[in-house]
Length: 276
Ligand code: KMH
Ligand code: ZN
Picture 1 (spheres, protein in one colour):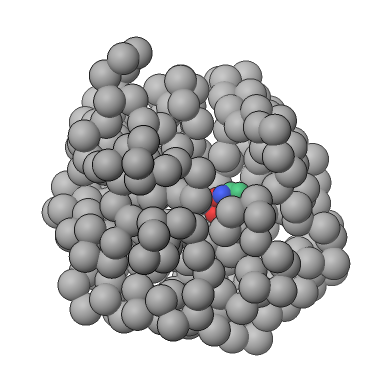
Picture 2: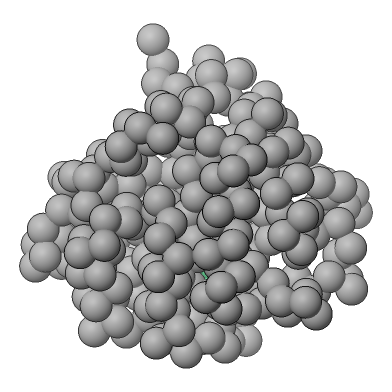
């Protein structure tokens, strides 16, 4: 039997403006409503960036705690908070995301050019964040924007051992201007280079690379991340109306590959989390 498909939804991100994309979920109510409908459509994990009252990206501690609580109250999704934040967030605030006690957090394995900006992830920050996840019982998802990040992951695991829960889940974030391209060839190279400790991987392609990366991931037995953090059009000139649409498309593509969406219990087992 083909392995069930983990679908992670990344509904908001830190890059798009509400004024440009009014359908982007930026309030807590919109985020929870999105989470509920994406779970019903087949997602089992949510990668969360939050916004403030002016719809700007924030890492406010109380808002993060309220968000985790609200998502747990309304869904069985694995709640993954972004520790990447926006390119403007300082490293100390990014570490404090763990105070909100999510199930999981993103952990990017290196600095990368990010469009015209720099997404900063110096090695000492990576080590500090990783050790805090181990101490606090948070399961990291290792974000790989480049092939060099794969090598850094091997270095990290060699130095500090396995994550909390014992599983190693990574996500290839491809097609960022400055990172690896969103192509099947790049994904094949990345998967081939993964350290032996990796137990599962997913992939997402930014913008127009979303479909090639989705199809390449399914072809290689990987999992999927989709959402308006990563893409805002269904096709050239056709705006995404909701995150649910993107999850539905991932479910459809998965079914073509004979992969049924994983439920929350399956996702928790895959990631080494205790049952909800
Ligand atoms: N917003 C990007 C600068 C993450 O969530 O950990 C970083 C990002 C990765 O989205
Ligand atoms: Zn993110």
